[in-house]
Length: 273
Image (cartoon, rainbow, N blue to C red; front, top):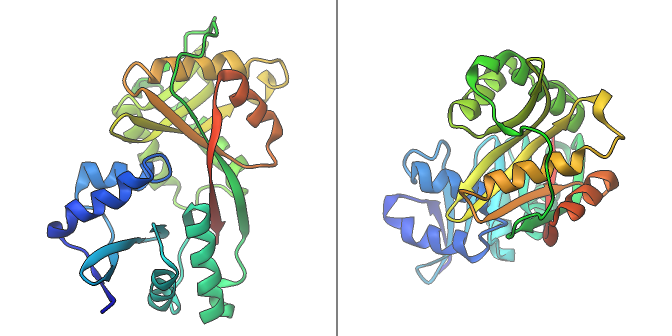
């Protein structure tokens, strides 16, 4: 009989099996899972079982992230969420959009008016040296530059999402954490961050880059390509595979990533509230 329940530490091997089936698409959730485990994940992990076998998982927090969701699992997950709200739904394209559509069917008023639906986002990877020269000193930015890096991160977030971070203190804390871990890469000119990119997740041999931003006065000059090459070649010294995702309408960014050596391997989707 099908079963839906909160997952526990004993389910960890089955969770790992599902996450490892799509390692690039699941890198963000897998990063948290590998570092924190089930009990300290930060929000419940809900499992959909059939005949005792775990088939699908839902990371049930402020962001809803379905993993390997079967049609039956999507219906079950939507029943759980029909009376609540979330900040976003994120995941492999079919999982994320499938869950959103099921939620809309169950509670149209609650779920059918997102701020934005980012469908068909390109998931891209690179697993070799870029072969490009970077004449800039792109490197992890230390915490003594937290004010400048934080301001750049807020500017990036505002451009990307369309609104400034609602919890500015919490967001700056997140950025400081990235810097402390050596995951905040950038270029400093006269003590100011003019370019930034974060390692936002890592699992196994894979690192995900996000938060890419270039100060407006440097744009349109072909500088993004060598700067991204510097980040990728630096990050690959620790993680052989680097991945990121980009909105399909952002043609300049896609062209830049392709020039650096990224290729599309999948699609994801984000529904923002």
